[in-house]
Every structure is written in C-alpha cells, then in structure tokens.
Image (tube, rainbow, N blue to C red; front, side, top):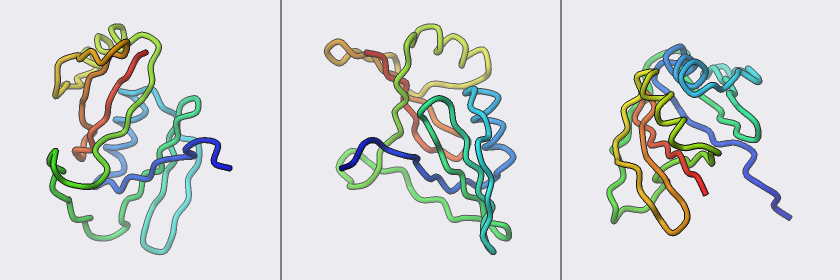
Amino acid sequence: MIQHVDHVAITVKDMKRSIEFYTQKLGFSITRTSETPKMNIIFVGKGQVQLELFALKQGTAKPVPELQQDEIGMKHIAFNVTDIDMLIKEFREKGITFISDIRQAGTRRHIFFKDPDGTTLQLLQG
C-alpha cells in the first residue's frame, strides 16, 4: 500500500547554487549526500518534504522546455504551508520573485515561483 511520496528528484545545473536556494531561501537542511560515477546527489528536506538534487560531475545537463498547459508531464511541486502570507513576505525579503499572484481555489490559497533552474514550485495553504 502506498503511504506517501518519499521524495522528488530534480536534476540541477549548479549544485552549489541549488543548495544555497533550498537551504538559505527555503529553509531546508541537507539530510543526506551520495554520488555515482557521473552524478553528485544531495538530499535536502524540511519536515516530511524531501528533494533529491542531482548534478552532473562533468558537463552540463540539458534544460528542457517548460510545459505548456496542453502538454503532458510534471507541472510543479507544491509545498503545503501553515501561513502563506508570512512565507510570501519572508521569501520576497530573501529575493524570491513570484510568477503569479496569490490565487484562491475554494478554501485553498496558492502562489507560484521558480527555483534557480526554472523548476516551478508552489506554496499552498488550506
């Protein structure tokens, strides 16, 4: 029986830049490190949220175009939060730019932003 998502894996261009973003701006901690012959792997997390960051040891990973509304694939990673207004203010003070206004969907409120490599992230309350 599936219980919950264990982690989400993201290939990044610059591991140092991504670690800085996820730890210093989003407040995650490094929870584990690993490597393969071709990749450095760093897990960052906070509470039940775990992201696995992959970076090539040599060369540069190829970026993929952003999915459009009518295309199939992963659109974003949503983080459930307890106080979206406070977090938006804190993230703006840390230099995070939001790519949407705060939106209401029933009793839920949400807003979108991107990580340094363009992965779309969402804050969601409710």
